Length: 99
Image (cartoon, rainbow, N blue to C red):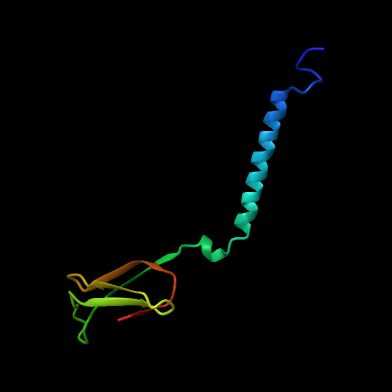
């Protein structure tokens, strides 16, 4: 009988074992991803932007703007630009008060 017919060799057994091990790890990974909360799959950071104006709607450059997370009380402060615009980026998800 020739070596390739009717008999399993040790090399083919090892290859199949490695293939099944890899396949099992892949399936376990898919199952774990399925149990993740939807919120963890979504973006975890946001941006607040706007323009600072007075009562006459004139823009106000150089104004300090503070965004405070109402749940954690953490705050970030930025200064409005030449055209009164401000941008507070990379904020963790949450509800913010802007002053």
